[in-house]
Image 1: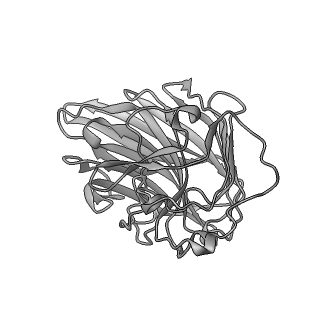
Image 2: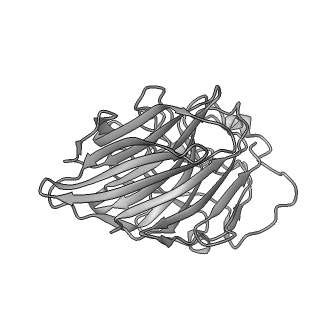
Length: 311
């Protein structure tokens, strides 16, 4: 995954502490990137891409429009197989506002994508000061298991849990991963990030709870460097295909819903919108960003659903 870890930097062939890796710390990290918050209308098809180096680059993504529109059927790119691509590919991305100085940030995710669909990272990336940031998310696999990622990108951070290691997406940071989460299509999982400050410094702990059983597991914990400036008020939602991509015809249809999305008990708002597929390729990890039709609906504060037609 590409920062979005593994799912992380569209167009790059990063290691998977991002989605796309098959190692414990792979296929789980992904990152998206926007230094400021953009609405669908402001984006007009632009998306930020963060590379493992921490540098940003703007990628043109034609077709994002403001407002939720109804697509005329299940149209998609007419010749996606003619567009060569490499792993990973961020094929759905949008930015939203979030209070960066949060003490608690959480969301509940429910994936309704077909169970046979593999190597997809459903991630959330929050930007930090000085090209840093972190992401968390779910990576379902066929066979009843899923991976979970919780990774920090930037120098000076330290792993504080056995599920974590130094390094993220072939760069500085900390990658934390679970690869044996019991998973079922349509089941709800709540991912929560909490901030702790004591004499040892400031740390963040990520947990995931299977809402069907109430069982909670620690994904990981990392200590940010002394004097760290904190996170920005900007985040990216992204969906990444981190394995099995040879052409843009390998981008699948997906459906995922989020509820209870908020920070410090206050719901986060999302802007509905839609993307109409074209045959125009993007670049890097965003090469396949135009080939799917998808809609983002936001029925209430703290919730949104993404539905795509695939190619």
